[in-house]
Image (cartoon, rainbow, N blue to C red; front, side, top):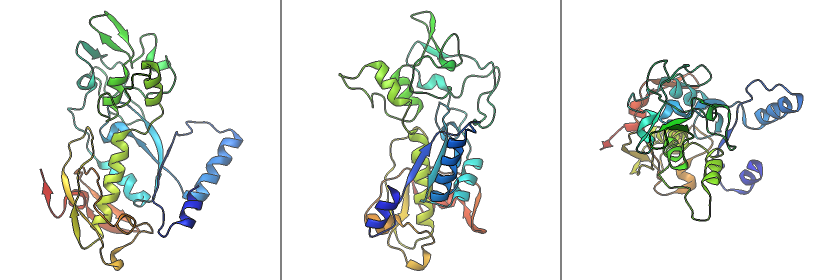
Length: 281
């Protein structure tokens, strides 16, 4: 599909793709598919949405041509996670998460510490009563009205993944169907973080600027200046957002720290990359 679209577009198509990690699945046909995908779009970067602001683990493989893979990986490694992001903050009144009994382990982002308030719920899936959400599993929350452990409802799952409350609510859609859908979607926190980072680097390599507006996201956000229509000599990537859109682009931007490299050349401090040259509260 990408090849077809790229062939019939005047400019190279931008893409962001996500898929579940193999997690030890070494079946021959699965591995053959992995090698085929890599030959088409290159290796993926494993990102856990919890690291970039979500209150639910979601380790997924991501591919994008918005920015170099090395920059995406390095930014993920150094981005700090707010200590104020805890599961209890996204739960309905009268409900609370369980204290952590088993800490997180790689490849999950290590945010849950034994004996501490829960920072992230287990990964949401598209079927009910998964291992983490049954028989006292760590994903269940305590309901003070029912006096029992229950699975987080759809509203709570939406908030955990960065969506506005009620985003999936439709009168004709059941609660179970909403939970199933939320087990299949891209985490909004992770998606907008990738987009913001890609747009920030595009801006970093440009000469002229326009103001952009933040998307909905549970992380603290700022409105930044992003570049457009810069000199062609400053364009290092095959895909150019501004050439495709030619107008203001709406993205969310997060200020993060650290130094990233692309093809061995420092791109500069990421905080400046995202917020330079001017940040509006």
